[in-house]
Structure formats: C-alpha cells, structure tokens
Image (cartoon, rainbow, N blue to C red; front, side, top):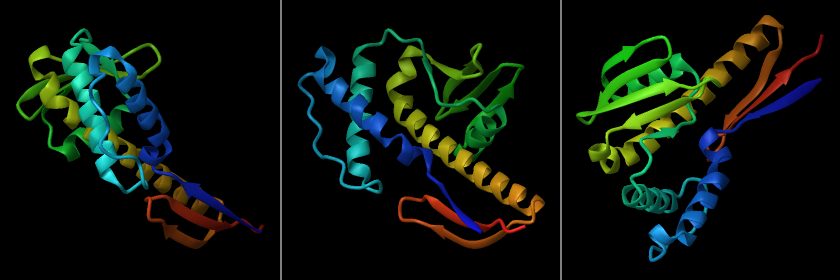
Length: 182
C-alpha cells in the first residue's frame, strides 16, 4: 500500500489570509485612497504580494500605535536559524527573548504565554523594517517546511517505509509517496 503526502509551503497555505488582510486594509479609513494595482494570478506572482506589503506598510506607518506585533514564529531554534540565514547580526538569546540587528535597526523578539513570538521595533525604524519582517516571515515558513520534510523522511526510515516518488511542484509544495507495506 502507498500513501502520498503533500507538504505545502506555509506561504502558499496562508495566501488567503494575506489577500483578506489587504482587502480589509483597503476598506479602512487610514488607507482608503490606496488601491491594489494587481490581483493574484498564481502563487508565484509576487507583484500582488508586493502591493499587499506596500499597503500594509502604509497602514502601519500611518497608524504608529503598535509598539509590538505578533509574529508567526514559535520555534526558537528555527527563528535563530532564520535570523542567521537572513544576515542578522548581534544575535543574543535569553530564556524567552531574542535581540538582533537587521539593516542597522535593532529588533527584539519575545515569547508570550502561548510560546508565540512578538516583535518590538523602535518607531523610527518601523517603515524601514516592515518589508524585512515580511521577508523574514517567508524565510521562516520555508525553514518550517524544510524541517517538516526532514522529520518526515527520518520517521519513514525508522518505520522502514520506502519513498516511491518525490516531486517538488511549481508552488514549492512537495509531494512524497511512501510505500508502507509491512
């Protein structure tokens, strides 16, 4: 018997949330006169995502009330790996916090009671770092997918399941077919 497992990149799985957020931002008073120039055509089309990032940045810059923002990060070692891969410097880790510098701007990540990280940015650096944080989020999700892929292959090997077929699709989803015959 065989089973196929599809590992979706989190960026693809969450594209609907990004689109919803963009359309909700358009309706808010703070960015009412801003229109998206493009619409999503496929998951590899970055122009729509770029428009969304610009819209989110405009809303955040105009509404500087947030000192900290929640993130999708919850795994400390993956966050540190992502920061290192991204070129962050002066990375310092404490029990539930990480400090670093990206583009000469300090960032402070701290975990809440649910183990989810939040990020604090100095007001003067918000507009400069919003795009960086979005790209950091995408890189973190790729690292989550890579770790899941690695763990799946390790567990399959322990159970003596053979990998029959492996394919990376255009949207970076990974399809793995395992033979699970006993």
